[in-house]
Length: 251
Image 1 (cartoon, helix red, strand yellow):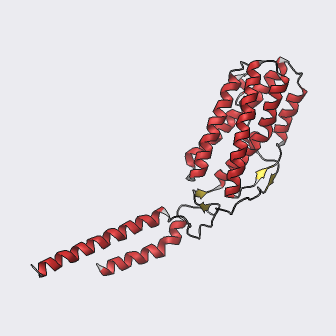
Image 2: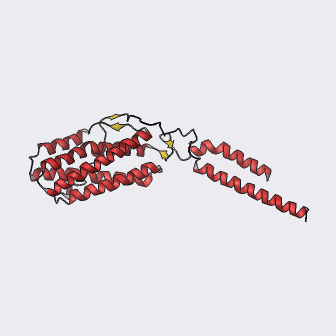
Image 3: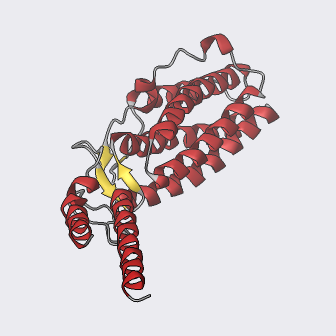
């Protein structure tokens, strides 16, 4: 039993580097929230990019539309993206992810199209509702994919907030009565969320991202904890067996 315990302890200590990298590819890093991979970084950049044009579009809805339903949709866009922008910058700093700094070419084109439409006109209301509803529908599918696959708890919680916000925006845009649902699938994700530029997000706190080669400071990997439980169980059996042997020798 002593030999078995010693062997299991050696197995735990020797396996810890492999466990830290279990199922992780070269593009992943381990964080205190779990593995962080390309999908998580892509998510932060795409949501930041959405705010760079959807926030200004919401303000145009408030300023240029005479339709109270369009104005209400604009208000939701402004408030929703102000909250998402704050959350995105905070999490990007924590995970050291660079963010886009301006809308991409397609997004700037949609803003220009809204700007060119006459104020207080149905032409503006239609452009506003249809461009934004189509973009939100595409992004919602992307968010669902990331939410389903991520093992990072911070990204998972953040994605839930994003999905709630995007669903709210789709709902108020549809409520305007201006959405042409035959056209909502026309915008590819690459146009909606392909950054035109990214810049490092200023770090206001020490980085929490750590290499997969290092142990996390605030906990052990799940596999390592599992092996520790096995060792504890074996040790318990050994002590129990030792007690039984002693009782047999000294009735």
